[in-house]
Length: 448
Image 1: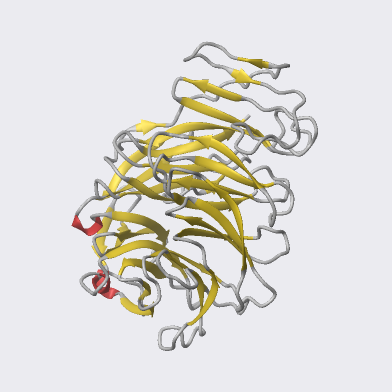
Image 2 (image 1 turned 90 degrees about the horizontal axis):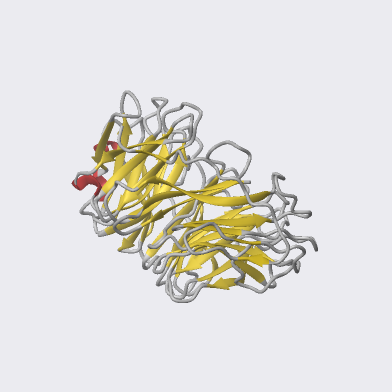
């Protein structure tokens, strides 16, 4: 079942020390600070904690880097909130251009798996996690149906009890990859109404129940054409020809790049949040679902969230702790990252705040997550050119300053950065892809 990777043991964390110790290159070296300042210089290569006593350390062994991130008050080594991130390569055999990645229990064995898109080699790869946290990797689609595949999503579209995969492809296709008898058997089929219809490049895809009828719909962003569209069926699909398409917007989403489904107005219907890089007004906007009986026949009202330069990717979550859903965003051109606070009236403009800028690169994925379990969220970010993985952390009030905590430079362009407890040990891990030859899917495994 493909190459088995990812089973390397967890090394023992070093005891902390006074001062700084540096061992020869190629061996483990450690930097230990006790005590340290509660707020170090922005861009420090080690994470920090809010208490006055902090233990931080960085290990480097060959090309692998483990970043100490004791982020909670007290920062006691071994506490659930203190973590190091160990890079574990899940798959490096997919070819080139590893791009989007999504996490789900594909084979229903209780362990989370991953599905990745490889744009350069035109493949969709499945990564099945074994009980010992090794990985079985296989290609589930590599035909013209997934040429230029950019992103993937999962959901049981045909209601057979097994998760399927949907691929958004830069070749102008949205492809349903149906799971067969088990997770080793897959059938890719291009959705007819996605191809040769005026969209030259589908870049993002989301699966969810738009109308609450128990069947899943597909929401997709078309970069080449600037569309936000919904693919749906009236009965469980049997082929790509089963799908119909409803276009939410085909005129104001120039270089559309990201879509998300969420009920923003609290009416029980899933709305759509969209980012479009080249829109000069409201590059970030949301579309109000007109209701379960009307969503595919009536217009979806567009509400502007705000303008962010060259806005590329987004995530949704409560950043300021007020109970409302906020939005984190990345900029492609400037590699700037920011967030927008939801107002009292969600249909009015949101207020935007800058968080960080990483020079010499392009902004890519963003994920909102409480990495240290202290009740306040961080934002995990990835960058494309000169790929960097970093954590952005508000120093106090998120409308003020943020600290940038670099975690890794794996040597290639990064894309999405989902955060999930992949090995079910109670700690949140980070997963991403690294494009280029020798890249692949990498799991930054939290350990102590």
